[in-house]
Amino acid sequence: MTDKPIILPYRGIMPKIDPSAFIAPGAVVIGDVEIGPESSIWFGCVVRGDVNVIRIGARTNIQDGTVIHVASGLQPARMGAGAGKIPEGGYPTIIGDNVTVGHMTLLHACMVESNAFVGMKSAVMDGAKIESGGMLAAGALLTAGKTIGKGQLWAGSPAKFWRDLTPDDIAQFDLRASQYADLGREYRGS
Image 1 (cartoon, rainbow, N blue to C red):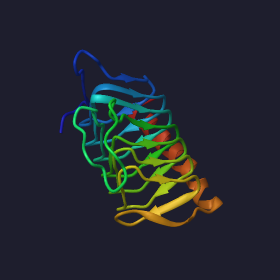
Image 2: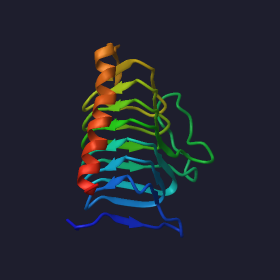
Image 3: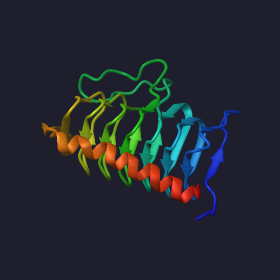
């Protein structure tokens, strides 16, 4: 492992990383990526904004071993029953504010709105969306084009609605975001 993160341009576009964000040694951030204030990208993560854009909001934590990528619009492909083809512009990956993304997750060409939670070793595929206050359980696969609604927990592979979240569940989202913002600040030494 390197003692610094690897930050690389792609086609002349360098990632834009807020100075208050923490990018761990060994993490790789490439291309058209923007990372907001107090966010953290942890050890062994790959954030590859080459054929489309990646946007990560404020106070969002992307935990160890996670891979974030995008889809170009160049190769039409089936995305599952009834999901259609990749749109001409492809799919970026957009992650809002105060999001927790658990260890070893795959986020591919999807949207995770602010104040959502993505469990460890889960996958979110092309065109899928987790609405604000939604949660994907650990180990779950959210297939292409599916949407987890606000206040819903989805689990399984493929993921399906499991139950509505409780107020205590939702309170944990902000707690985790705050804990990781503090931890990133500690690792930065500020």
